Amino acid sequence: MQPGIDSLRLYKIYTVKFVRVLMTALISIILPVYLLAQGYSIEFVGIIISLTILSNIPFNIIVVFFSRKIKERQVLTLFSILMAISAMVFVWNFNATTVVIAAIVGLVSANGTETGPFQSIEQAIISSKSKDQKRTNVFSIYNVIGYAAATIGSLASGLPDYLASEGFALQDIFYIYAALAVFMALLYLSMKDLDAMPKGEKKIGLNTQARGLAAKFTALYSVDAFGGGFILKSLLTIWFKVKYNASLENLSQLFSIADIITAVSILLAPAIAKRIGLLNTMVLTHIPSNVFLILIPFAPSLLLTIIFYFLRQSISQMDVPTRQSYMNAIVKPEDRAATAALTNTGRSLAQTASPPLTTACIAAGLFTLPFVVGGGLKIVYDIAIYMVFRKIKPPEEL
Image (cartoon, rainbow, N blue to C red):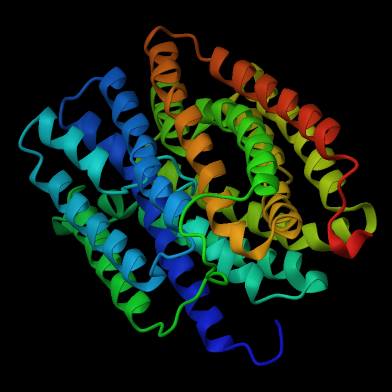
């Protein structure tokens, strides 16, 4: 971190990241099971998952156009409150219409990943608080904390099974979710003078250079997100439940182990990046992970399916801290939040189309297709991003 930076503020960002990802992991497993238990069809659940992704877009657009004048503390607090309200609407669950409304307005994440405005702003804050040589390490810690939270969230998703005899029900998870969202709001309120970037005279938009970089990142990340949208944690929950009749207890254990494996791999990413560079780390770890992804549905047994899944998770997310570090390194500080929000908007929009296609495949018994299409598209992304950015180096690699 840069001298004079309030380290307590960064630790608070780590804390709120932990809470938010715990919520994301928890709800990404619970929501599809909850909706199926309410009698909704697999296809309808796929639509709801898409809508939770789509809901990120208007919030990211706010960051894109007003990042240079936005009051981060108030906006992040407001977004947290909306999450709490949306969770309660899912509890009330009057009919399909209220479920759709909750998915649209509330930033309830059922996709198991973060593409919303919280991360867009926090990435800019982290970059502004870090030296070039330490930036990837800080992003690695930020993401490891997220996967530690995801592990706990995945385990907690088994509570309805573990505590069924005590009267604990699926909808009780949404009360926990709402309470954690309120805690997030209070934590953001406690962060005084939360500046994500220097505030310039220009009030909206990006400068010409930033627009070009943002357009390239957005196009490429959208391909990756569209491919990844076929195998979101919520969809894997349905896939394992339908194909192998997995229980919530089984799923919570499976995903928590996968999250631990992923967290360990992320810790190794900065060391690899120092040796071969950020872009090379992104590409050379991502391609083999997607080969394992394609192999998952071809496994002849549940055990081998799980092994391929764990192998995939052991390298699939090494590109996350390196990708975040690389993008923030080559974009000017005043444009970081807007660029991140724009790329996340593209990712959310692209990812929206995938879940209904996956649930339609599962309902039709086409268990292999989502993995082949998703993994294939992600490999195309890996090759394309290397070709586009191979000549652009971050400051620490010059």
